[in-house]
Length: 179
Image (cartoon, rainbow, N blue to C red; front, side, top):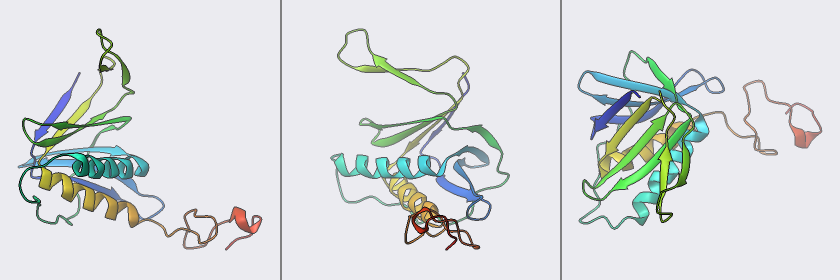
C-alpha cells in the first residue's frame, strides 16, 4: 500500500486546472522540491474545507488564533495526478496539535472494532494514500483558499440554482426554455 506522507508541509492547497465548467480539482502538498497532487471532485473539496472548519471550531486550541500567510499562488508544476481520490478522512492529533487529512484512492470501510466500543477503518490492499498533517494555521489557510476556489466557478442560475454557462442553460424552472 503506497503511503505518501507530509508533516506540516510548506503548502497544502486546493486548486484547479481549466476554465469554469470544465475544471479539474486537485489537492496539492508541497515540501521543498517534493510535490504531490491528487485529483478529486469539487464537492469533496468543499466538504473537506467545511469539515476542517468545523473541527477547528470544536477543538479547544490553546493560545491565540494561529494563522499562516495567505497563499493565492497557482498550483506548483508539474501537476502530475498521483491518483483520483475516492475517500477522504479527517482527524485531530491532540499530541501534535495537527489536523490530519487522508485521501484514499479506494473506498474505505468503517466497522466496529473488536471490543465494540470504537470504530476501525478497513483499507483494501493496494490502496494509495496521501496523508497530510497540518498545523492550525495551515489548516485555516487551506479552508480559506479551498472555499474561495470552489466559489470561483460558474455563477448559479437565480431560478433553479444550477450552474450558468456563458451561453446560458436550459432551466427546469422555466419549463426547459433557455435563460
